Length: 196
Image 1 (spheres, rainbow, N blue to C red):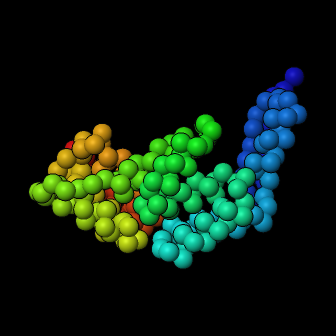
Image 2 (image 1 turned 60 degrees about the vertical axis):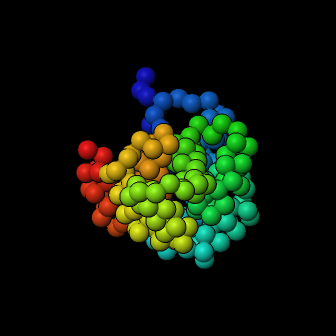
């Protein structure tokens, strides 16, 4: 007897697959998750716009989509990833209200790190705190690259501050943008050097 192997193709590419026998309810869940739809295509486009043109307009678009489709978890994740720096307390409240979303556990930790960064009261003096203040301000003004550069400076000085918050925030931003984003490609080597 052979092991079944199921592949889903869309526009000539494999978009999902599984091997082995699954019960009918699991197959239905798999289909619901992976079958293409216009909503999923729209979300993919909005996520791309949020990453490439992070600003009030793209954030408003993903927020409107997430509110129109509350059952699409990925939309909720990107809405709050974008909102974390601008509505940090609401973001933390949303995270604590969520049932365990195992598939998005890492994303929730990333979002929480950004909200914590936004809520941080930085009143001390010195080069580390100046870098953190610069990062906070730039990120809240939708200036991702400038904010990330300031965070790299902070990591170089004190990466362990507040339970590694500067380092965790940078990792969150890399995850948000994706490894292939030009800003990620440009700044990742600098971040790696700052860690060591």
